[in-house]
Length: 257
Image (tube, rainbow, N blue to C red):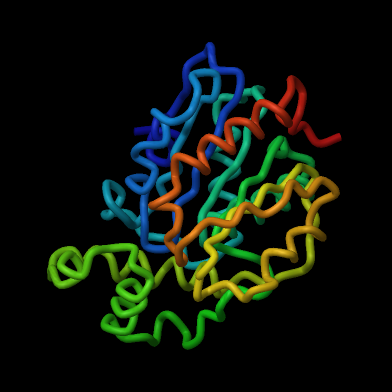
């Protein structure tokens, strides 16, 4: 597969689609978390799920362990094919971090910025600290984190083969997150925020930080649940995102002047 084929599912979208929506997964996860989303979104929004290396069908590739090289690689992939349609970004947890910093980087470089940024389960300030150096943590402590968040069934986490695949990806993703240094950067597009009412990783006031990261803050949609609320409320989030894409992504939007 070429670069886009490795990173994007699918690598291209229907030419009839007016917009693109790129979905970024959480730490240790992969494109499977968004398996139902393409069916939930209207046909004029071409959905592309971003698969990072080091997991699922890219398990034989080395994962990234630093943020900036990963953002550079994402920029190369998004720009592949010179698709001029407006695009939106959505990410949950680490995916939200990547979506935000990608939008910041595009603005700084004069590249094509997204027309809309959707972030869920993460904030630049007030998100739980990573703690110990991910490289120094035991496999069991990482598995305990995954178990505590409820992103995978306990039975699956007891499977030795699955743990062998999950831990390296999770460790690398934690390192990516730990390499982020907040600088208060503002993006040039609207931001819509989604959060879980009982998310243990997000301080109560953390999502308010997003108000200062854009001139067009679209509010925080609060859902019942903890950090993985996205699994129970994906349809509602996808439906809201579709409405926002139609409202804010017009022809020519997303091009940095």
